[in-house]
Amino acid sequence: MCAGQDGIMAKLRVGALFGGCSGEHEVSIRSAQAITQALTAGTNADQYEILPFYIQKDGVWRAGEPAQAVLQTGEPLPVEAQNPGLEHRSRLWQLPPEAATVEVWFPMLHGPNGEDGTVQGLLQLMQIPFVGCGVLASAIGMDKLAMKSAFAQAGLAQVNYLAVTRQEVWSNPCVFPKLCDRIEQILGYPCFIKPANLGSSVGIVKATSRAELEAGLDSAAGYDRRLIVEAGVIAREVECAVLGNDQPKASVVGEITFSSDFYDYETKYTSGKADLLIPAPLPIEVAQRIQELAIQAFQAIDGAGIARVDFFYVESTGEILINEINTLPGFTATSMYPQLWAASGIAFADLVDRLVQLALEAR
Image (cartoon, rainbow, N blue to C red; front, side):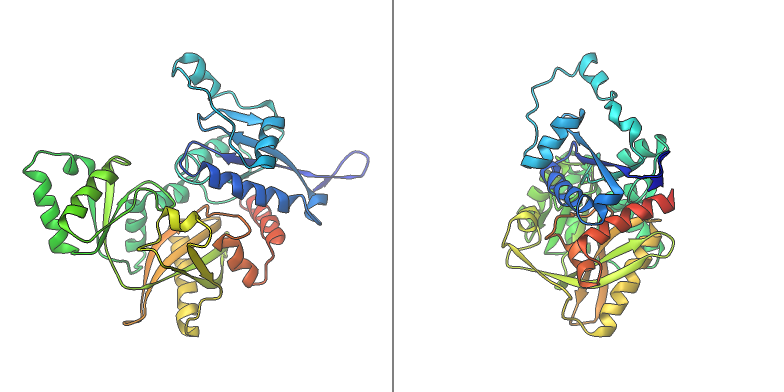
């Protein structure tokens, strides 16, 4: 806050940016509801003024009453079928006039066009501070193949994997069988086929046979032109939250347990499908090592502000394998990231306040 001409402390105007053009549109709204509520409660209400900005599913930005209505109802605004002509394209570049008054942005967007560096680049061009990772870290965190390369360069242990292109999958009948042969020989079954550039377990398929492998590759190729196939591993799935800029801190470690075949989109976002154990019942030395690795992963991609790092803990061998980093994790009151920090001594409202302050500090 800063003092106005009359000596009264002016509130910092926070642009709450949510919605977006991705399959995680509704999840983004839920995160925005929780974050904006926290920023307008208690002592935060004396510091911050929230300006909501809702990005429709067609990419058009809305502010004021329409954006506030989405926050209140939790329901996306209906979008009429658009002719992809000049008139519609021009609307994509027309930011609401309220955007010029924002002093710090809080992106609450998940998935492509939200946490992949695209919006971060736009906010950087505005020359206004924003919460979270910058363009580079966001892009690496979203692209699984780039992420794997960054982790390998940093010396972080990972499961075996292969990079695959859509061209190889949708190729002539001679190439595709050879691709499947190579996957079977190097990775075996079970294996997981994933689009390289989608979040929240969208498009992921588990294959336990040749038929499932072929179908999974075909399905994933429909989402992205670059794919990743990973070897299956019998392990516990654990997660650690990171908070900070140049001196990041790691939270306690949490564990996800579920009865479904794997942690897919439905399991992740359906109530009762998965349980979170916080803190995870792990040996102290294992938990401490996971915290160290989480910070290493965060620094490997040049992270800022916020991230959640996911690991596989192979109990039979003691191995800790990094799975992925999420630079804009889900942020509802029941999401893993804020719960990990609550268990580490930082309440939800204090956490969002800290993220805003870190944005100002970094930029």
